[in-house]
Image (cartoon, rainbow, N blue to C red; front, side, top):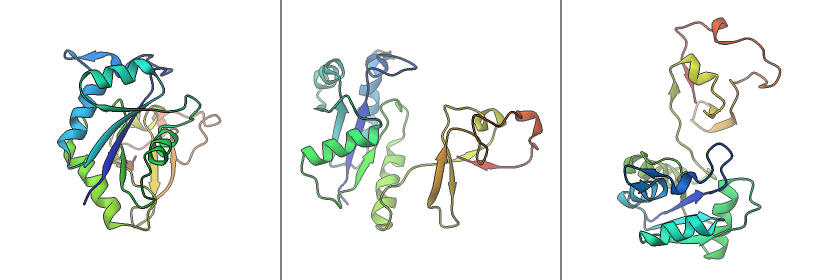
Length: 183
């Protein structure tokens, strides 16, 4: 099964500007992410960015970078632009590997692609894992997912599901400690 990996990487991150080019253990973060992707069974790995500094960094270590519009609202939009620009078929399997996931195991990248190949009625797939700490449940930086009994995502939220993030005032103290949650 051939699949492609696209790594969307924005320089203008609101929480940590310049994040893709910041060094971790002597290498830019984006290089660590790229190397994880190259360890997978992907046929092609591309870094999608709207910033020349990220593109230059990527090309400096031998990665293929594709410049995209700065007006995209999400990494998914950036990936769609790359797919159109490169003329990929609508049924191509494309893995969206976040540019700030330097420790993503190659086996999980392969698993996502394999799941897509096995479930062709799905338009996309994403990794999830159980939430095992209340702190994680209330962390807005952690995206939560509700799935149906077959594992298909119903919706995603940065807030604890099903609560409204701006109106729910209770905190972690109301939760029982022996209940499992999934994200």
